[in-house]
Length: 274
Image (tube, rainbow, N blue to C red; front, top):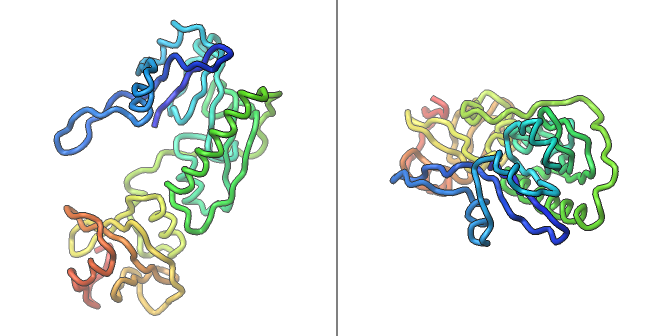
C-alpha cells in the first residue's frame, strides 16, 4: 500500500503520514481508508494524501515504505528520506519485489534500508538483512517476515545512527506489478511454477466454464495425469501434479478441495483450464 511516514525531532514524533486515497470496497462501494491511514488516525496523527504537504513541516527524516510513486527531486532536496525496500537490491527494483522473488523461485530475499534518490529504487544502501524463502512460503507469510525485519532495521538505525551508505552492486532487475493475466494457471506449465503462482494468492483457472480460484495446493511427484486432467483433487501438470487443498468456485466462498470435489463430482472427461 502506498505509504510514507515523516518523522521529526529527537523524540521521533510523527507529525504527518502520507497514504493513498480512500478506496471503494465491498458491494456497497463505500469509501474505505488504507490500514495505515486507519492506524494513524486512531493514534491522533495528521494524515494526508498530498505528498506536497510535507513541505509545510520542519522534517528531519521521512521513512518511505511501499509508496509506489516517484518522489519529486525538489522534495528530496528539502526532506531527507530513507526507503525500506523488500528485496536484495539491485535485484527486484520496483512495485512488486516480494511477488517477483516468489515467482522466480528465488531461494533468498531480504530487506534493504536505502537512501531515496532520483529514479526507481536506485539509492545507496545503509543496511541489509537476508532471509531464506521457504518452499511453502506464501506472499503473506514472506511479506510478514520481511516487515518484521524491516521494522527492526529502521528502529535500530534511528537508535544507532545510519552510518555511511554503500552503492548497489550487481545487475538490476525490474519487479513490475503482477498483471491479472499472470494469476491464470497454465496446466501445461510445471507443477513448481504453478505452485509459485498459487502462493501469491488469487490464482485461478476454469472448470466447466466457470472461474475456479485455487488458494492452496501441494506439488506431487505423480506423472500419470495429462495436463489439466482431474483425479479427485489431484490435477495433472506438464511434469507432475498438484493436489488441490483449498478452492473457491465463482460466486461462492472458499471450501476445501474435498468439499468442492464432493459437490462438483468431476469426471475423467473434465479438464481444468477449459
